[in-house]
Image (cartoon, rainbow over all chains, first blue to last red):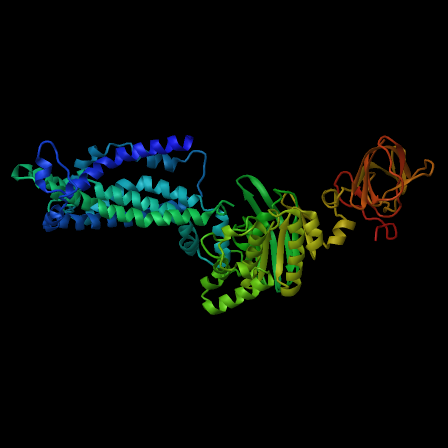
Length: 272
Length: 364
């Protein structure tokens, strides 16, 4: 009985979250005329993939997709490499007051919007405007503090005795990290990767300000929307939105397996 | 330093201001099984970590076969270690756990696997080779941990309370298993425990530690029969040795109504502690004499074939242990305890050190 009410609650919340997505998916498959008629008409009998044809035909949108993949991928890579390097020495630091943690959290209290203009000026002076690498560096910089904290906690969960066993078995410190600590902390590392990738993929403000020609998909989508007076192609816009979500979905599904398998592999023995 | 085996010289270690090890000297001859025995916090695990290179000493040196290895990182020391919580790699199968150390040292996979299978057969864990540690029972994990440490054929084997997470039955079984393996491989071994039974049954030599200092290094029989000081006398032996404070007057120990002749040298101090193991004391029907002590029975315990009495006397409570026989006695009954003239131990009250007794009056 209790389970039933919990499931209905979960169902309601899911519905709440999924309806807009469902609407976009359905809209992307409708002929445009259905979407601008009053009352709104969504029929299952006249599904079509015209919207997707239009979206895929839009070279600028496809460019944005590619650029987003580069920027988000690069940002994820930077965060993982720098973040793990930073989290490792913090792993066994367990003082009562963790100043390093407080310091890193403090950076998160600064409203990001106040940093847009300073970052713009810095990148302009360095001649790094309109460069994908620079944009991914900016994303990495913003996402690193919180990522380091999360990574550190996942690494610290790996019992010290396992590291010791690896050292005795003949590993150097790096090998012990690479072959024993990292695989065991993989679920956490995957979670951070997802977090960084999604945030970088969906980021709009900095992408708009810092890139001119090399724009990411969020910016392209906005452009597409901005062309409303020149005749808006709603199915194409909806299709583009769906297309923009799919890569993120793939990343989540791919890394989700790691998270699950890690939890199963742990099975209780890890916390010795 | 040209001997083979393991030596520690002048090891000092402190964490912040707390002294953990003080001028520790220890020699483990090639092929010997040495047990570090002591209460928790006595520095025995720290000693083990210093030997393995997982911790560094503030002062002092570690030698292996005469070579100074004090500053070598653990991966260059060629030691194996069994940890209290097993510390098996949860993301690897049993086979991978066992071959990991050899693979990291670039041994060919086929050879590493063959060796692992040999050891697995010996430890009867062969059917488990494809499983992950999470799918094993505690006893099985313990065997795998042992196999992982042995399979590389390390120069020195370190064991840090390896049985403390096992139940009593398994513990005794693993003990004889370790004994068998040591007889077979004769690997120089340092074994840490707080369990005296483990120490007495496994060790060639026992090193008793307390407060970061070694109190005695000797064979299990010597530790039991000739404890070097009061700490060792109290720590080893179950039930504890009976200890009574008193005075030494012209070759006789006196405490209240009790007087026992002891063959101490003439320069022994006046204030001493007399010790007798519970099995050295006997109950007697003889009338009160100088070597008997009248008392009242407080507790009796029957542990299998063994009977334990706790008796309240004028000079303190006394424990006696003997085989079950005769009529059962009732609590509160007045009885007399007879003190022997041999199998006695004498310690100085002031220093706690053992006072040697002349041969003939000493036990076995």
